[in-house]
Image (cartoon, rainbow, N blue to C red):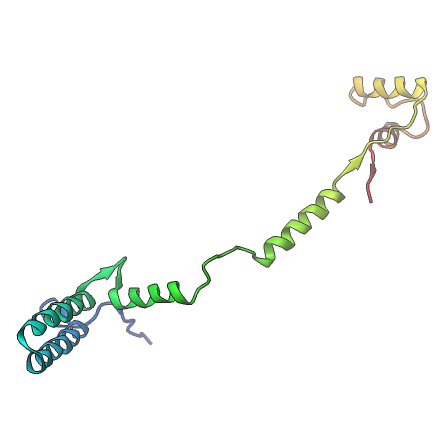
Length: 158
């Protein structure tokens, strides 16, 4: 069974050309407030109130800041100014845990090389094994690989 998936859900319905329902309602409320100021105030106060109410009505209805409607932007601005702390410090718990794990891993990965004193014969035998690329096996019973591991690899730090 096929379902119709709605598209363009962020686009508002239009009433008169480019004016949306929200803009129409805001302009209607602004017009009613201007009419009330005309009936209740003298002419000079009416002009002042008309400029203020008309300007706010136009800004709230038509202006967008960074793609957001002005009233949403204004609410976000007030939240930023009054509710959030002024100093933001990034202290994510995971970062602290990761730093501790890295420090522990660095301690684990640290090797101390403590060479054993080699007799001259063992030293010359090891150098011969390295020079021949491992074709010379050596005369000791241990074999070249054990001899190299025993003398070259350091002890791990605990």
